[in-house]
Amino acid sequence: MNIRIPRGTQDILPGTSEQWQYIESVIHDICRRYNYSEIRTPIFEQTELFQRGVGDTTDIVQKEMYTFEDRGGRSLTLRPEGTAAVVRSYVENKLYGHVSQPQKLYYVGPMFRYERPQSGRMRQFVQFGVEAIGSADPTLDAEVIALAMDFYKELGLTGIKLVLNSLGDQESRSSHRQALIQHFQPRIDEFCEDCQSRLERNPLRILDCKKDQDHPLMETAPSILEYLNESSQSYFESVKECLNQMGIDYEVDPGLVRGLDYYNNTAFEIMIEGKGFGSITTLMGGGRYNGLVEEMGGPESPGIGFALSIERLIMALETQNIDLPVVQNLDCYVVALGKEPANKAAAIVTELRRAGVSADKDYTFKKMKGQFKVADRFGASYTAILGDNELEKGVINVKEMSSGEQQEVSLEQFVSYIKHKLEVESE
Image 1 (cartoon, rainbow, N blue to C red):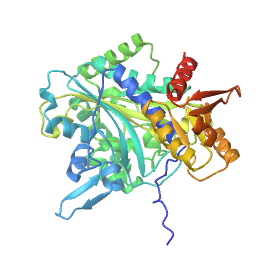
Image 2 (cartoon, helix red, strand yellow):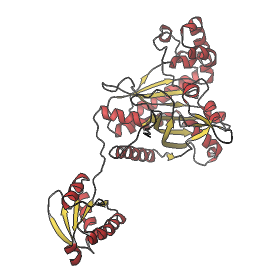
Image 3 (cartoon, one colour):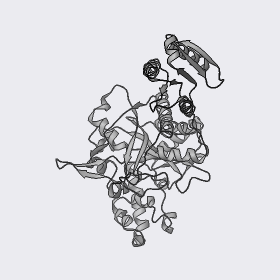
């Protein structure tokens, strides 16, 4: 039986997985510098979490979730995004009572959405996201945005653009909601079934519809910026002023609404400009979600965050021909000639590894020439040759691959010799 990988998933093979590891190392480092701590939540949660947290009117909940019933009859869903699960954990573990507020958290992990696979969009994909919960300070919005911008820039991406909008507070959104209903209602029958069902439930979602994005009413729809009350307008101005002081350029787009129901006030996306990236130009998105913690049963705790796809990031890096500084070379490869030397070589590579040196040996009974080819393939800095004669003398021949120089070293001193040579090279 020929079993193949499920559609919309991928195997990340050696040679590529090192890129992922490097990106993840940058994530951990930049979050450390911004004082964000890692949180890890389950891959599946109760379905109600996403229905309440993401929103019944979203495409994610209506069409894209992987939902199943377990043996106990409970409805569970593979997580389609990270924010709802983090907020659930924040409430359940009473992180709102922690002495350090806001709680500044980040996560990296797989998400699942049943949608049409395409370049940069998978059914299982990996998200990096941050959530800062417990403060309504507009400078925190700017900090979250700065973290995202710095992350992309540290990986070498150019032509990235920050797009901002404000969705306003509850009062502002209510006024805008009525204006949208009045705008779309006379011709709502010209829109798709999803938009028709959203007219009364959540008309803001109509603006996010991909099917009807070219309808003339979309271009003339009332802007949320026209309905911001004084408080919402002041908040938005503070966010922009802080970004100005940070030296972060941005563009205000009144049509940016984001695809999840929990956003309010600040909403943002980072896009990539330039040819070769296909139809998908948005790299990441995020925004403020005051009220979501209360929806999950917690106390009033304003929050803001973002999420980005690692797959889409890698696609952007490839488009711009950016080679990540991934180190794949082996420090030392031990060439063993004969049964007894092969047994000794197994012990030697173990000693090297325990000393912090990356090392390997042959396990397929290749002759010396073949073993040297493998050492070259691994990019070994040093190759150590051990035969019966060397074993009898208690020595090993060490060859520096870059210069071709060869030196006989006692077996007792071999590990310290290699460590010293590598330390000198790294200085």
